[in-house]
Image (cartoon, rainbow, N blue to C red):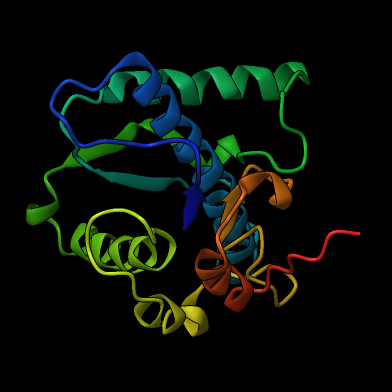
Length: 189
């Protein structure tokens, strides 16, 4: 789950350029973590097999151009090969990706996309304390046992708060609750 305090990704049918950029940025952060997880699983489950690919299915949202997401993924691969990635803390393991098997479908047509929507909705309800809907941290808290971890920690892997300097996120006390549950510490030295 990636919660970006200052970027709104809308489902309006006419998404703007900036919304597409924000969507692709979130996709990038997710792919960094997904490919890291799948690389570990590949080594454990399929030792010696190098030619594995991840099939990515996006839940279709109105107005987004998935060809831009594919192009952005290829752009990141070129940056990786040139050693010129802007973000260097993590990188997408592009050998696991193939834009030919990146697809987008209506969420109602794929049970896996419906599950992803449920998880995203639970986390959104916990982090969005001022918007429409009911603020409730309990559904998101229930996800902790299945959330992806790195070195037994959800912070910055299974749950990623952006911007990364957490004091810049300017979260309310209520919003902090869910991130603290997922191993964030809001102590500023």
